[in-house]
Length: 323
View 1 (spheres, rainbow, N blue to C red):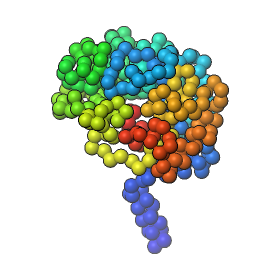
View 2 (cartoon, helix red, strand yellow):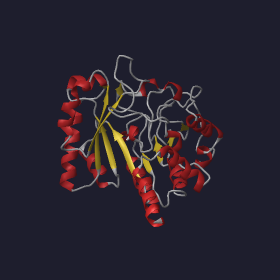
View 3 (cartoon, rainbow, N blue to C red):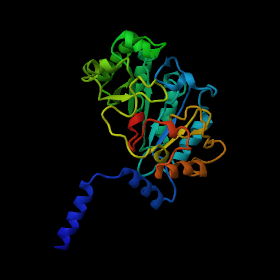
View 4 (cartoon, one colour):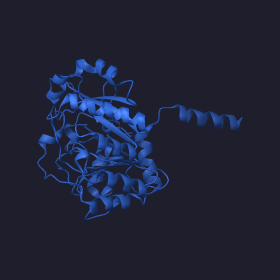
């Protein structure tokens, strides 16, 4: 009887909805004594070939540049000290177009050399995705890529993604799909659409256009920092927001110069958590500033934390908002 009860309790535990917020905190604090990031986001460059209205790029006042190799190398080498046994998710974009980075493929190779169990991903607007770059991506150890396309018509797309050409982007992406099939590659492809009032009417057509080609269609709402109240924003379409934001518990974001930002919406580094050239990765991730934000998040009291106090989106453990 005791054995039956024990099995029932075990099955009940796994059947119940898991509070991933609590599990994540306990896992790191109980077993290591430190918070350890699961997602490492690297801004390889903040130069971009577009001025999209749903991106903070045009609001940024910090300097432009490319991540120096010694900064990149230090981050990856320190990640290798705690990557063993579980793997990390490496994201190679932030406020810029990663295909503009001349060291992009060298970085991907280095990550895969040093972090054997980790995955590498980046988002691109695909404007620069010529055949040579497509082949380089497909022949690289990149695990996944997201093509950000916010419309299904030239008029809608070019209104949102200023500086880009819809026909060229669609051609580049279709060529990539064809080349993937030709080379028999397994890279996971996501098509992403950020919603606002200008493109909501194209959701159905978007799914029809890309649904049979992409591994995943990701449709999310524009952030309240970037759109007017009359636009559509807040969370992921049809998805309930979480009660607490997980970014400070599992994400560590490095700007190109080594500065560590609170999250992807701290686009001008207002919080100032540290710099990897002056401290260790885990030293920064467990410093007083980081823990102050975590404590505020635990207590659901972020009124004094910028930009959390005016943020419309809550981010989950799986990083679905920045996928």
